[in-house]
Length: 409
Image (tube, rainbow, N blue to C red; front, side, top):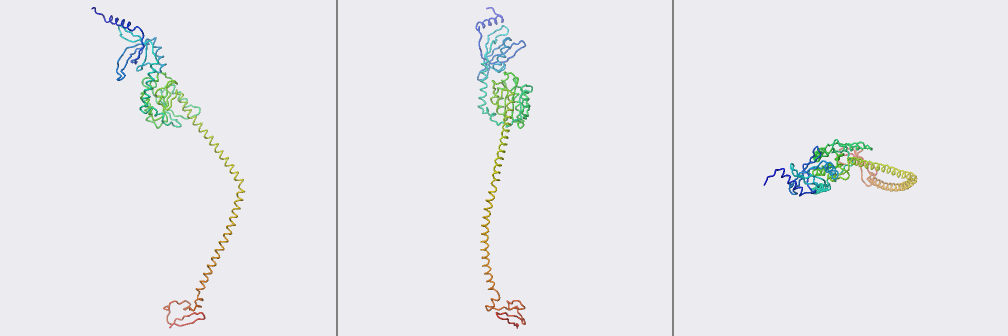
């Protein structure tokens, strides 16, 4: 048998493949090693992994010609909100190609964005389910928001137009509400979004007491850059962050996993600023309403008291007259009672004095003398002890009738 050159053999393979795969086929695979060159062509690799151990079970080189790629890429990214990059799953229409020099490859002719959207939705649901299983899904939503969240830590790109819009609208609000805004710079697009945001959160964590709330905003970026906010690690960190988190990172129809765990989700950075201003306005209106009610209440109380005072003044003569009459009657009663008490007291005292006078009269020397007793005096002093007398002393003995003078011998 005549030997074939490698080129001739590859040519046979090419013809065989063209005969076996004459049509176009829809395949499902994961993108890997996606890159484009100066000519505008896109070169990539299709891979399939084992579901259990994630090892490769199939690979195929692929390419997208410039005339297809320049329409296919923006169409896919606009439809899915996902970058056309490595790591995503796609459903593409391909034609089997075999080149004598470059070998087997698949040429992409079309793409079905709905398949990728479905896969993205599935991944988001899986992440949310895992967060729920871990018990952290609603932790940030359950935090108490400060009544007046004035100290705001902002995570955004330093050059993002959305950040400038947010800051300008907040700091120049028409009501003059005060806000202290500090930026913690982070990448808001590309493959380093997750790591950059986690670093910014860690920096805020070191200064928790200085802030009331964390705001994560992006503006001016493509919808396709939202995939960086759909990661488990970032969502778990935000869900468990000790300060309330407000997001304004997408568009109205796009809700990321980060939006789902945040305390408050707004559509855009401008909407976040409006949320703050509206909260302050609502509170200011409430304070004004309460102030008005307080003034009305004070005036109401004053009117009531004024009416009561007028009524009291009008009733005062009658009340005073009535009171004077009552006091006069009480005084008359007291006077009569006093007279009675004094009369009783005087009679009692007179009786007591009479008894005392009788007792004094009964105890007087004259009464004793009348009863047959006598009084002996020496030098005008009463003698009560005979031993106090001496011979020669002159004593006087007083009787009822008369007096006897004696000399002690």
